[in-house]
Length: 301
Image (tube, rainbow, N blue to C red; front, side):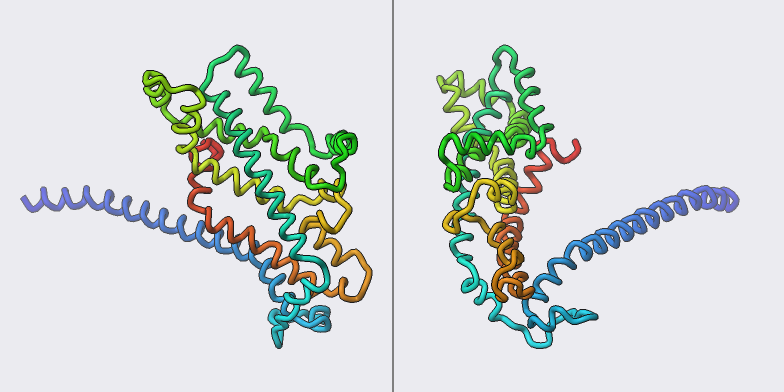
């Protein structure tokens, strides 16, 4: 009997050793992954930290070598001086208006097109969708000159219409993302609503669209970030200070002129105030953003 018990223990020992080695490997892999994520996060956060730190330094301290990591005495007045150097509030209000207007237009046009491609059957639907997606392959610089000529023909140069109307008409990326999300919604909901006499627009407005909140959140964040960070389009289309965006306003700090404009801490303070709203928007919508990416087919599935 003792021999049998010892033989069973000897057989069970390799399994226990194997499980322990597997757990050690998994734990080591997690540690390595977390260390890599921490390193990457630090690399990404260092420029932002340096921007904030430089915005609190004096002009002399910002140009010393070797540079100091933290300011000796924080200069908070740089943030107030930004509003005196340039019409920053005007640039901010213009950028917010452009971003919100384009976001609303993207909601309407992209969601309607996505609903047609995902939930309605018509001849040539797939071919038309593929042709629409091919517009993503065209670089924006190729269409910049024709767009400029078109805006000039309409008389929209240096106006809010050039900054809002073209972006409000939808995009291939937004349509594709919403279509992928709508395909994950059961078609039985449409069939049940049609049996009750619901029209296609009622199904779109009351059934499908409320279920697309995560995807719409993703679209809103991406649209706001795109309009907020855009530089080339407003550079070509705008000239007057009354319609300029934040990106062009930041460019004025390094374009020469008075001594106030070439102040490095002042430009860093303006950059910090420009980036901060985007960071807040992302953190507020982070949960819906991740969920929308995962369920819309853009997460590698």
